[in-house]
Image (tube, rainbow, N blue to C red; front, top):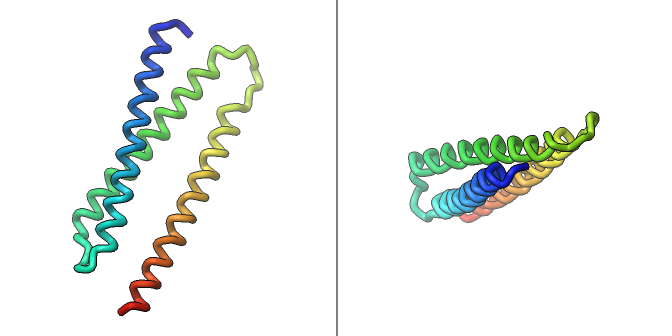
Length: 115
């Protein structure tokens, strides 16, 4: 990798870091809105969720490209790094989604129990 592509790669990874921070902010905002004692604002939740999903897709694409470009210079012809890491990322994402769904289910059950 030449220094120019390394710099560009670092800039793209820094942008990914900023997107991850924004994703966490959006998730927190949605949770705050859902916990609102008065009815949650549907349009705000939908807007945040849409932005959340778009940012997740952008992060995933950028990270895949960066991993792929990092592997392209490797001399191994049968390198399974990209598919293996992709599978690990998918598993971690599924674990995270399941945990979030469990938390949401618990929150909903608590809300129904309180009402």
